[in-house]
Amino acid sequence: MSVQPSTTTLPGASGAGRAVYGLFRGTQAALSVAPLLLAALLADDRPPPGRLALALVAGGAGVLAMFAAHDLLDLRHDRRRHDLVATPGTRDLDAAGARHPVAQGRLGVPTAIALTLGLGGLALAIATALNPVCAALLLLAALLQAGYCALAAVTPWKALLSGAMIGVSAPAGWFAITTRPDWPLLALLVSWLAAWEIGGRNLPNDLADVAEDTRLGLRTVPVVHGTRASVALIEGCLALTTLTGAALMVAAWPTAGPVGLAGTLLAGVLGLQLPARRLRRRPSQRAALALFTGASLYPAAVLAAVLLGSTTWPLPGA
Image (cartoon, rainbow, N blue to C red):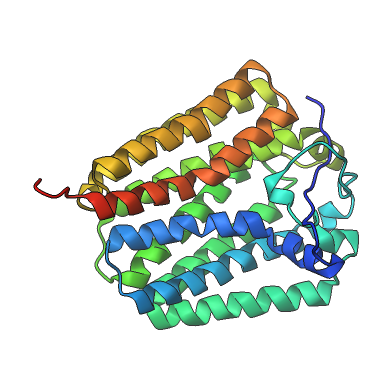
């Protein structure tokens, strides 16, 4: 499968602004807050506005810090990449702004470290004030991310750490709202998000970068096991994502109701299953990135469905 470098620029933004936006992967970061908000809504469909606002600030700062830290941890490999500069015609949601701006030299390492530590510190401070469990979950996610980056050239199964990182971070939204755990529902939430991250974002992204990762000596599932095995694993993970998402909505029926369940199933078909089928029929970078984009939008679509469901369920007279 041929690989073309890609990025997306932000019209009208300054060079420094694009570099900072690229460091934080601003578009992807905004979408990545959805699981935290969904967890908060599942904990209480009418959460206290003040706590919800603080959870949003902490979650947003934490997500931004995580993406920036990923670029810093991968800096040694990224500086050897040939795909740091965009080629026209290929869209990559994860490369909005500037692709790997620190590796390009468009943003200094001290500046990137200061921004990462500042936002990470803000996230941990607010999370600790809300509930120390939230801070512990964010720290655990950070350790899993560090492990993932350290294993870049060691094993392809580091993808499991990526799934675990996303899975364990989302319940911070739950514990920001309540101290009472619902373990079966939280287990579904973690499983759902871990399968989504591996099959919807991690593996498709690796599939799109397979030629460059091979040149760099990075060990990803597509590099080690090939395209066919990668696509099969993607389809398996996304089937699990769709099923566990439906089960999560059933477990959260008092909040989600039939609208949440129907919306989640529809989002799974449109955002995950159909792009995965197209990838299986014709593997290419374009198809991998299309799946990556659909999967990135999926949690936000589920959040919207649950919000709609919580305002319409139970229906008047039901």
